[in-house]
Image 1: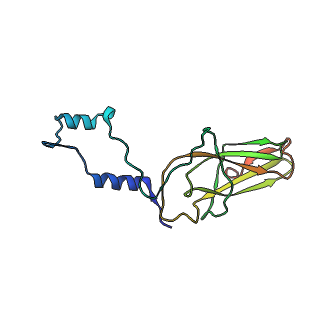
Image 2: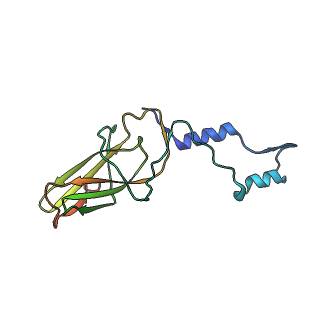
Length: 166
């Protein structure tokens, strides 16, 4: 599967658009008003339109973590550390929050849970979706959340991140 990253696309766009500004009388020089205006951060050019094939991030209107469900279709998933796991619904469910990337370049493949008498180990598995081919995704962190059902209420058991346990 071939992926194009934003730095590669941005570099290509910069090379294709050239360097410098031209005025009606010719190229801008370091002493010309056009050159000083072009280099001034206050008069920066408007952002360029999105590159074809890029995936825009999904932003939650409330600004909180975006709820996701495991897709089961990640290509070569890996363990991902999470930030927090909060119990609710009488301790029978955990809400797990972590930082992730945009879909389809980063999807939640599965969540594994190992319960013992003293602790609950929750492991998140992420990777690129198998359906994502020849797409460019922006390099941005998105906070996501998912819910995990436990066989028994959490009680006094400790919740452990399976990606951090060795």
